[in-house]
Length: 70
Image (tube, rainbow, N blue to C red):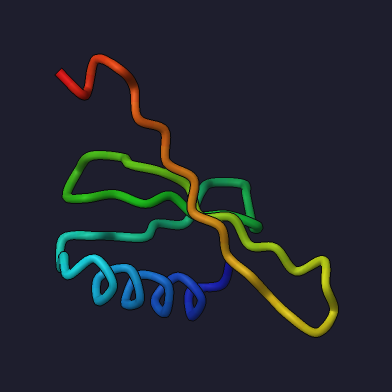
């Protein structure tokens, strides 16, 4: 992902979740995805889907482990 995409996605997530601590960070050696953090805690991955020529979509994937719910 480009730096411009990362900044736009970070702003979108901050606004949507009303949380200024959300950060989107570039992944080393990956150009189709970025990591999402709240503060220093990794929470998920954003993937870019640009298979459709007319449209680019982004998917956010977050795993929640059962011991985190306790």
